[in-house]
Length: 196
View (tube, rainbow, N blue to C red):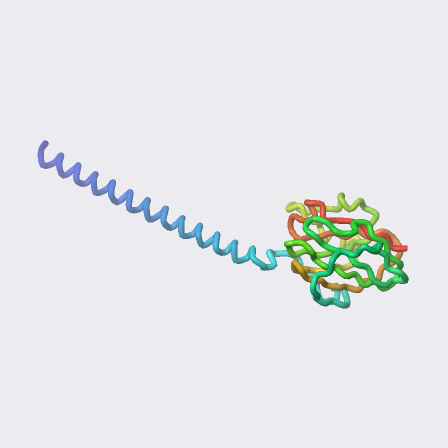
């Protein structure tokens, strides 16, 4: 092999090394960006709002308080003359799932006995609770309910072991209650309240 051939092989060898150094740098950069994306997602998955709609204070129930969780009530879920109603939230269901109340100012207490954050959203509608309008992610389309005048309010973000209360002015008719935390409605966390 002559000198010119050796020089050509040497240049090719240096070019191959440069290619692999650049490839390694590119892959290392992708790995770092992936780790940053994972850390960002984990940070927002632990208690952040995750882009959910937040209602203005005027649309929230008039009274809210947090207490220690109580065991589910063994008495029927009735509210007399408005009154009080307890709806226990557990992971993927309400107890009772079909409650009744009398028209008027009804204070709903929502102890959360589950392991996840839940909420209770009310909408006055004759629609089957399993057939509410949904968004592409499977959550109930609250904007459609609100636009149709069916939105009655909500008790938002009840932590595991906590209890919140909300007072709602309920008129006679059928109300649907559902948890609109992502994935909970699709898992069957809904029910009804019939107001007489």
